[in-house]
Image (tube, rainbow, N blue to C red):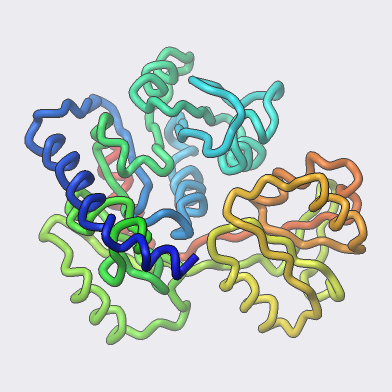
Amino acid sequence: MKILRILLFPIVPIYFFVTWLRNRLYDSGVKFSKSYGFPVICVGNLSTGGTGKSPMVEYLIRLLQTDKKVATLSRGYKRVTKGFLLADESVNVDMVGDEPYQFYKKFDNIYIAVDEDRQHGITELRNFKPQPEVILLDDAYQHRKVKAGFNILLTSFGKLYTNDMVLPTGDLREPMSGAKRADVIVITKSPSDLDEERKVSIVRQINPKGHQSVFFSSIKYSDTIHATNTKMPLEDLNLFSLVTGIANANPLVNYLNSKNLDFEHLEYGDHYNFTIKDIELLEQKEIILTTEKDYMRLFEVESLRDKLFYIPIEITLDKPKEFNRLIQNFVN
C-alpha cells in the first residue's frame, strides 16, 4: 500500500489543485453555501479518518442535551440505504451506519439522522416536532454546501495535518489551508501527561489564525467492560481476543498492554463489514473484546452475543471550561 501511494505521487498536484479550486469557489461565493439561523456545529477533519470524531460528537451531546433539543446528522458511511433516514426502533446498523447507530443506542431524547445531502437532512430534521434546536454535523467539514455556524476541526496528535499531504500519497482530503475555516482546533489522542512546552510547540507548528482556539484532548478508556445485560472490571478479563475495525487501534492496544492483559489482536480495516468467514473464525473464540463501534455490528450476530464485550471511551480536554463556554456561547 505504501509503495502504491508513492507511485501515485504524480497525482497529488492534480488532487491538490482540484480541491483547492473547489474551496476557492465556495469561499468567493461562486458556489453557494447555505447558512442557517439556528446553531449548526460541524465536527470534522482534514484527513481520511482516525481522529476521534465520534467521541467528540458524544461529548457535545452530553454537554448540550440537558438544555437543548439536539440532533445529529451524518451521511451514514457504508450504510445500505439512501436518502434521509431517522434512527428508530425499526432500523439496524446496516441501515444507518455504525457510528449513528452507536449514538442512537446510547442517547435518549435526541434525533439521530443520516442523509448524504446535508442541506436536505437539515430541512427534514427541522420539520420534526419538537424542532431540534442544535444540529451536530458529523464528518461534514468538506461538505461545503452547508455553512455551519461553528466548525470544530480535529487532528490526531500522532499525525498532525501539518505533517501530511493530500491524497493519494498522503491522507488529507483537502489542502491544509482548509484549516482556516475552523473556529476550534482540537489535537486529539494526545498523551494525558503532555507538558506545556510540547503543547506550545505544537500550537506554533499549527499556527492558528487569530479567531481560532486550540485544545488538546486525550482518550479515556473505561476500567469496566460492557455487554448486553452485564458489565465487569477490565482487570478480570484475561486470555481474550481483541477485535478492532477502526482506523487506528494502537491507543487501545497500548492501553490493554499497560494493564498486563493477555490477548490476541484481530485487526480489520476501518468501518469493516465482517464476512461469513470472519464470523466463523470469531465463533471459535471464547471471549471477544471490541470497540463500541464494532460492537454495534458484531452484536447483530446472535452466535457471538454471549462472548462479546466492548470497552467504552470518552475524551478529556485540557481546558474543558473554556471549550464548553465557547460551545455554549455559540449555541445561546
